[in-house]
Amino acid sequence: MTPFVAEVVGTALLIIFGGGVCAGVSLKKSFAQNSGWIVITMGWGMAVAIAVYAVGKFSGAHLNPAVTLALAFNGDFPWANVPKYIVAQFLGAIIGATVVFLHYLPHWKETEDPGVKLGVFSTGPAIPNTFANLLSEIIGTFILVVGILAIGANKFTDGLNPFIVGFLIVGIGLSLGGTTGYAINPARDLGPRIAHFLLPIPGKGSSNWSYAWIPVIGPVLGGSFGGLFYKAVFLGQMTAIFWYVLTALVIVLAIAFIQQGKAAYKTSKKTFM
Image 1 (cartoon, rainbow, N blue to C red):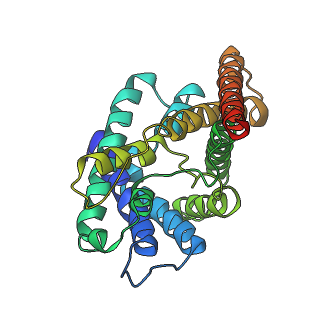
Image 2: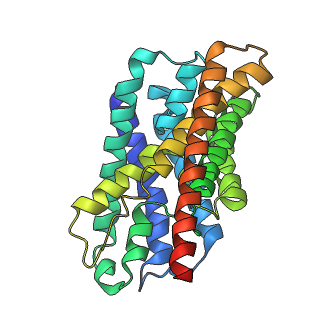
């Protein structure tokens, strides 16, 4: 199996298990309906573990453009391979989301709420707030990347690393996922969102494209900075790119903060008119 195919297969497995647990918990007349957030976080944790076990030896099982970029920024992955990995991850995510759609085929019609249907495929904020939502995705992905690198630096029983990474995903979901649904992976969110847009889902409604940039830009910035932070702080190898990425992160957050302020002002103005 080539690394490209491995990333396609691994990311598809990630979405089949992860999107599948979201569908089972959310869609009407599923036996798992309303089983709760802990079930979802456990499902996503196991999704990552199984996907990494499946393809780790072939591609390293990045399964996430934010992880690929983080490893490239800290020198552990060649930049020449970044584009094909990212293409493979998005392709795998679309395939995985399509499988979830087919698996739960009769349940879409039974579920009236279009927001619930979209939630099977992609994330959304519990409280819409551009700055806070972006910051949540940055923090979550930063913790993901630093956690993965820290786990990799320790010695475990052979074959146990993917299982530990799965528990890292569970931990992030339980502790940090309640704000935005913890995409922490551009392919995991945008790939299935594209599938949602294209698939003939009964009564599906909008794909919420106005929010779609947040679970892409947030993880890219958080993951890239996470890789550079680990290299600088844990390994003592500070580079100029660390400051460039940190500056970009601060600028994007500042723009998001200003946009949120403008939106809040317009809302308050309408309220008092």
